[in-house]
Image (cartoon, rainbow, N blue to C red; front, side, top):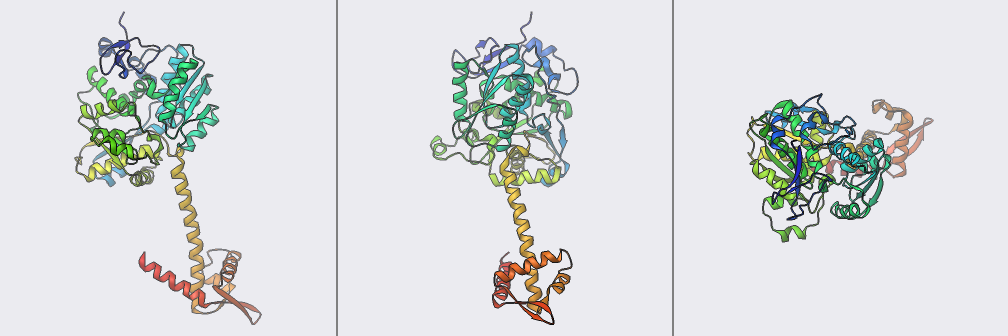
Length: 470
């Protein structure tokens, strides 16, 4: 009987029994990964509809198939964004269409299937967002207890998902690095199933299905751009395409691009050989909280994927990420979280730097929804408030300009404003202007007239001077 898959050390090659999942080699301490037996790889076939479990033949064995209809996500043809970036072909792998709106639902399905196979009733996961939200939802559906360790810095939208799915949540540390350390200890002490993606190599296997889907949807792109936190995701994508090549389903793999935020870029720094002392001095900080990882456990795996695919690694600023997030939404109608939007910011950098040929085919991985990330929502809400205040300010300015020409009563001012608001609203603005000393009133022919004051004229002059600067 052919063994279907096993755990092997990436460094020394030692083979380990596949279950229970382990991430560290007992011989040399290197990272473990699942490998498919060559015979199985040669004979594996995909079957069924385009969903996660279509690729069961290439996944480590499980008996209980946990599912919430994850996978089978669209490969969005981003034609307007491609025009903006001056590339011929750009596609967005839209993982926001998964049940909890992120790519981590794939991992949750496989990990929970394995946990149920092994009789676990509770699991532990360290997370900075998406994985915790996914596991909490899947545990709620299948009746397992979900313990989640989170850092102080995280997206509130993801925390809200964990809360509504009734996960048991504990805050520990500033970034996800400390929760990962604690999750390893707790799993050992309590006997809970280890569902932290950095500590369970099944997560990498689950995420390989993204590559399988893209291959079936379009073939092999020239470039595949992925945001990096701990480094496991980009390794998953590369490994998936390597599987396909060994199976004879493709004859190439894409060049992998790993992107991080400038405020926290340990993998990029290692790849570019930026000094350790310089990295130690900088406090990690980025609004792309989904990739805020100070000491990525899968750093070498990510670098291997980049180097062996002849790819590149680069970092982008938070400002570039925010601009990319807006561009994706306004041009393609897709609301991506900041960590995902970094891929588009990286694409722009590559195009501006002449790295890309205009005819290259590019795929960017959109890992999660912007509705999970509150920073951008707060920024947009603040902008909305500014727009509203600006409209109010504009109305008061227009009233002052009308009165700078001649005195007028309320009805005349309302008509001069184009009758675009109620008369009650106009009088409210007039009362505000009078309280600020910008207008005064007097009575004539049984009507109340409004007159601009010298202070009001000075304000108009200041506005005119300010407009010269803008």
